[in-house]
Amino acid sequence: PDTDFARVRPYFLDGAAKMHRQLIVTSLFTDPEMQALFRSHSFSKAGVMKLKKEVPKEGSLGQVMVSGLRQIFQSVPGVSSFHAEEDTRFAYFRDTILSPLLRLGQGRTLIVAPSYLHYVRLRNELIHREASAVFVCEYSRDSEISRGRSHFYHGRKDIMLYSGRAHFFRRLQLRGVQN
Image (cartoon, rainbow, N blue to C red; front, side, top):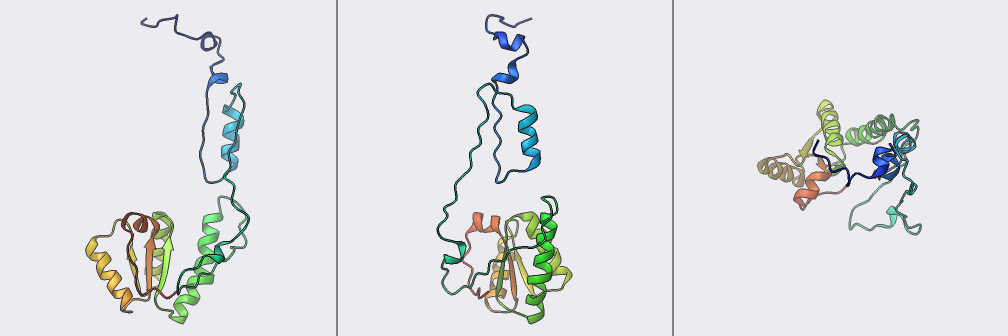
């Protein structure tokens, strides 16, 4: 009743509004669901545009120099689908990296979890295996962080599990890391 029909565009009344809207999706990767979203809902008369950030071809992560630390990059074999990637990667880490690390008793090892969900999964695995570890995340109290850093630095704990968000928010100086 309060609509000013002089301001209503004719294409809205003709049912062609879908041809005049924008659909913007941002993601780190392209997956089938995103492609289906564009195919079924993107009808703009201006067309579709996909932007992809170019990664420089020269150089590699192995060329990044960190004083005194050895970085190892490994490819995870057997990833069969996008949905199974997370479980496959965790199983590879648990069986190929974590098991020998705990068996050999390699001390002063820092494990950085990229997200809180990864952190919780790794923390639960370390607790289940009764590993000598300290846990630092963005939700840890200052006293827990201080105590954990001290135990790790003085060698009373072999592993420090550190979340990426804790590093982003706190930028802690982690001393004693050897692996």
